[in-house]
Amino acid sequence: MAATKVQEKVEPVKSEEVKEVLTTATSQTFTKDQLVKSKKYVHRRDALNALLVDNKPYSFTELDSILKQFDEGGKA
Image 1 (cartoon, rainbow, N blue to C red):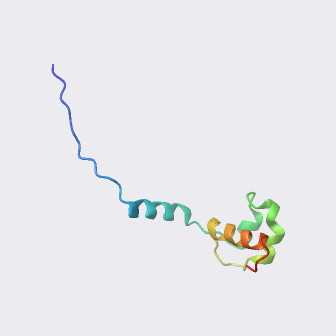
Image 2 (spheres, rainbow, N blue to C red):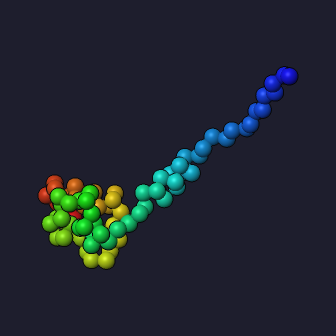
Image 3 (tube, rainbow, N blue to C red):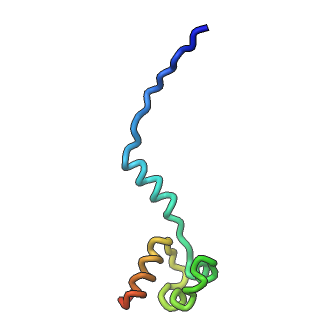
């Protein structure tokens, strides 16, 4: 028996598609209460209580930016 090769057309992934998937994957948001109680930010609880607004959703990216600005002495 002769082996046959099956060639499939593979299309390159568009950068817009990758950005959309990454945005969707990282767009989870959490409330102040959830973040204050999280293990990830256990050492930043006082700052979170002072900087965040109740019932407003925050993504990790947004929160990290707020904390970085706070650490640098800027107003969040």
